[in-house]
Structures are given as structure tokens and as C-alpha cells.
Picture (cartoon, rainbow, N blue to C red):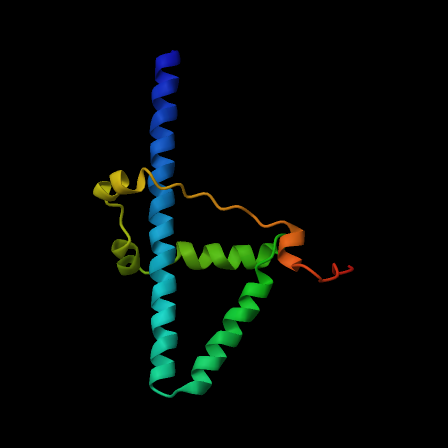
Length: 125
């Protein structure tokens, strides 16, 4: 009985790692695509479009705060409803798993003090 549980646990952990890598690659691909579009707007002198896209992204970033469930829902809606072609671009490649094995992908959340920076007064709510 215990052997089956350990085997299931191992399979689950492996599937989570694979899913995490797929999501990470999809996110990177999406961001690269957006940056290319911004760069093209800049190079083709479409400054209005360039600045408009930046303003929209800044507004979206402000909404992406903990506790804002609407923005989280919007983010996951975009992520899950991608085009089939976009998803294929970021498919899992088992060869890369070996390369990524030594890389730790943890993200440390900054403290409130680090975000506010030295010399800044904390915001009163």
C-alpha cells in the first residue's frame, strides 16, 4: 500500500514540475511576443500605440495585487484560453529537464521595507 502511495507521489511531483515548466515557457513566450510588438511600434514610429500599450500594461500591473480576485481571474482566463498554436510553441521538452535540474526557480517576495526603499515613509491606509 505504501509503495503505491510513494509511486503516486513521485508521479504527481514530476507532473507538477512539467506543468510548471510549460507554464513558465508559455509566460516567457507571451512576454517576448509583447515586447517584440512594443519594439516594432517604437521602430515604426507608431509612438501613440507604443505609449498606449505601456499605459495599459502599467494599469494592468497596478490591478495585479493580492486580494484583487478579478485581476487574478482575468490573468488565468488569458493563460488558459490561449490559441492552440501558442501552446504548442511552449510544449515540454524532456531534454531541457536535465538542463533545468540544477537551476532553482524560487522567487523571494520582497518585504514591505524593501519595496518602499530607504528614506520613504510607509503609506498610510
